[in-house]
Length: 300
Image 1 (cartoon, rainbow, N blue to C red):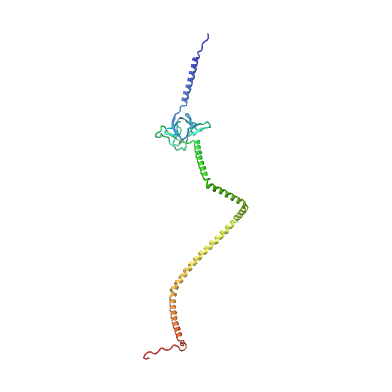
Image 2 (image 1 turned 180 degrees about the vertical axis):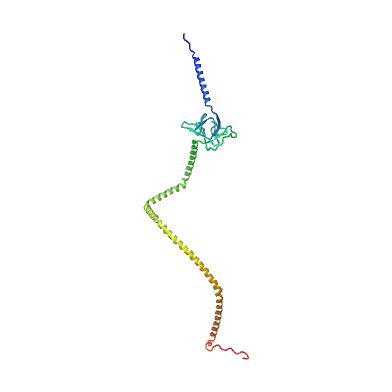
């Protein structure tokens, strides 16, 4: 007699067995990999593209946790609020910062933690926050995008400035300047031989510069000697002037009184000569007869 197999019971048994095995495996995994985490928050000032919950959080490339929440900042929609679970014992301090990075070319992103120095202090919970906040920095792609935008704006402004410069009278002036440059270049080409000769003369003059410099130094030395001699001569002249001043003082003190007396005598002599000349003019016979005796006075 054949036994009948109840496939429904067998299926239920197999499903129950698989469920039990999965439950045991999950329980064992949780038991053996049980870790303690600390919750931190960071605010990204850029789009969190490629980032999702359970994304890895790395510290200097070493996995130390995972992302547990992604949301917009209620007070500033331009920021993305990232909640992270970081293993206890990770060196999170005030010098730690978070950056959004892409993993390979898959487009998957993760949070990279790094430090600026080793002098940071442990993070504390700020007023109005539930968890400690790790400061964030722009990712490399965002920095490049910002730089490219700034360069694009600068190029646009530069092109506008160039366009303004190259319009109206400035365009005519630039055209004239280019024509003048062309004429000048042609003139240089036509006079290249003369320029070569001039350069050769300059080269020859440069070769004579050491000799000319030596002669100039000799001339300077001679000029220095002449200046020294002139200085000495001026000192001698000064001494001579002092001696002459002393002589003049002696002359004025001794000779002038005598010369005054002589001048007085000369004046008397001149008066007598004038008197004699006047008498001769009136009576020339005085020279022969002499001067008449004066008339006798009364009683003589």
